[in-house]
Length: 461
Image (cartoon, rainbow, N blue to C red; front, side, top):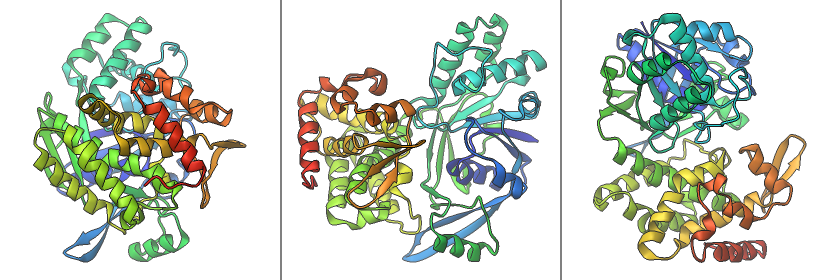
């Protein structure tokens, strides 16, 4: 059996990675996915209630006809919380059948903190936790090639596996771990950069939608998740990865490639960048879902203009190929069956803007010597939302013109604005953005002017 350890129990992994391994299992492969919760908050109660079984429903439009297809997922083995059952997680990490590790800890999850202590667990980063688990595997099974693992992080950062490996290396150095352990990690473990592409709207948000899905499934499912039919997983080809990850279409299309850069850059900038740029504007102007943005003349023109002039030209020299992909993305955005909530996409918007939009913004500035106007407007709406944050108990809320929403992001960012921090100071913080955004001539002035206009009721698009 090939066992997969999955850090993360969220809708995306369950509608993408688990659906893939489920399909391999149904095709005759011997696979089992085991979930480990990477953070302390949240509950696994619904998994226990359903014996780790659930459904996904893929919805789209084909030849003008609505397509709504349910899939039963029973590929899960254990679903574990290390904060409650560390022994079970350690046992999983020392299982010789464990071959693949997948993670989705958001763009902010793959990071290094020099203050992390080896004796801690709950308070340290995901790469730090991973380092401790790997050391336990090494100490238990030894340092042979056969005990090595394949790491397939799906976090949407450039060179996600390379960055994860760098973090693990830093913790090995920080904690002065054995040289033999580092040598094993360098030679036996393969960190494979990946690119994932499937829009997942997740669990139904309304009673009517939940009732409809119960009718489709013929039963109540507390874990049901909705996604689109399209799915692509590009995986860097290293070692014997082809023995465990099968190419071709298996619910999603899987490509093993020696050059993943184009796939990743295209997807992150065109699809994710468009999402991240339009969400704050859409929220402020009253839209609830992505397809509503696509149906609104001004919001669609805003998205389309940013794509054509400020994103596509900086993906690759093959403008036609990228434009073709962008057209398919817009068609996917129009899929009304996903019911993709803007507020769901808004999760961790700060790190998302840095990873998904800032590279296009920076490239535009380098070429044209001025700021990208439409990406600046998108950023201005983002700052309008964050500068309006109020703390309400353990929640952080924003009163939009049409409704009040809860904003979820890294607590230091939320606290900064809830405590009256200024947008300019936030833009200058290199720890937030990786650089000082005020270095872009005219950016701060444009954002300040846009914020004043928004506060006065002006619609910027």
